[in-house]
Image (cartoon, rainbow, N blue to C red; front, side, top):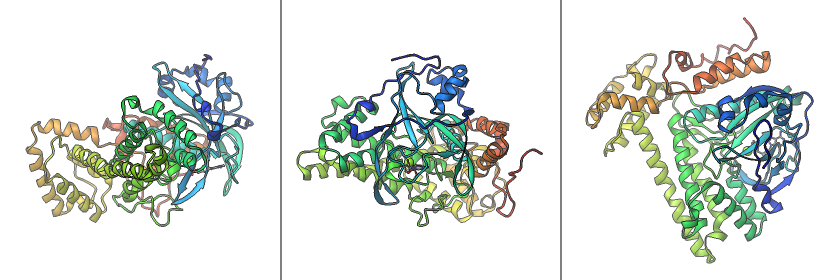
Length: 487
Ligand code: AMP
Ligand code: MG
């Protein structure tokens, strides 16, 4: 382990896995790297020196122009089901520079995304545009602040190069920090092309990295499957509770760690609608908001299939074990979701009628096209303005039922509202505000809009005066967003 000024402490265990799992590859140097954003709190958490990270020598590291001591750059191999179709993938535009060990002993992957071509690039250029990398930065950090497990964003550097998409766009590289980049697709890859020993090596690596206590498990690979199922059930319930739509829940975009990964065509929904999709290519709504819990189960079944050879020598027994584990998923998911919904309504205790109370509210929200986040925000603040829902007599009836239910709780009304404030964000990264921040940064080099937005998102449960403006809904679509500079 070697210490540099910035505090990088690399120890790359993934690189000790069988060669099949990666290709050693260096990032492709870029012309003129410049730091666009640096995540100071995250740098501190990782034991990295902020001043050093801003230096030319360290910006060169974040751009892939210089390899720090101890790093062993590689692209990971993986496969995955994309919109239901199985295919070989791998890091086509990302390089894992290493596993960094933080002062508290936590191990995180440091990955440069947009760092150039790799053996897995297929037809792609290996590059990323500034807008989408800033978008990942904003949304992943907002998710973290919402206390939802996610990969993090340490920095974005611009490359001084343009990349060709529909138009020429400024290029950028995101430094992504993850508990690991192991995916369901990594196991699919191992099961499809690896030997049983290679699959076992991958599973052992995943256990060691994410699931302490596995030594005590009677069947450690069943334990692995059960743990991933439990974490994904909890994660997807949290997405549903804040109205997050991932957009591309392909199996290569589902982690083993239980962190949200790969912020592409993702967004938070405004109007409550189970059919909400943001990805233009998801024409059938496979990854629509209301379908995410189901797709989570589908993806976990692919993980279970991949692990079958390790679950039991006897194939029939293996299938039975896998099925039993998978059967837990809907129950686990629903429990997290129901508990979360109760908390959003200030309820700490469980009563038989709660499910119906919640379902009735959601039904009204759908009928009156209510804004998801602002409905719960209004319930939390007791301020019922600005939505058709609140004028409906059915809503007033529902509200009375809810108040009656609240009065049956052991805790005081104040405590119930406190609970609501901890579970109903005052602010989420609404798409029109994300776009506004990106436009200012990308078109005008003005990062102040984004910085101010990030500040508001940093503590979404604060209910501070500065957050109020971010609760405002997007202008009607016939009014264009302000995308010009200055003024
Ligand atoms: P994603 O949709 O970001 O999950 O990516 C799916 C696959 O496409 C992964 O294997 C990526 O590495 C690859 N990929 C995405 N964009 C590019 C690009 N510009 N160049 C090369 N590979 C890419
Ligand atoms: Mg991906």
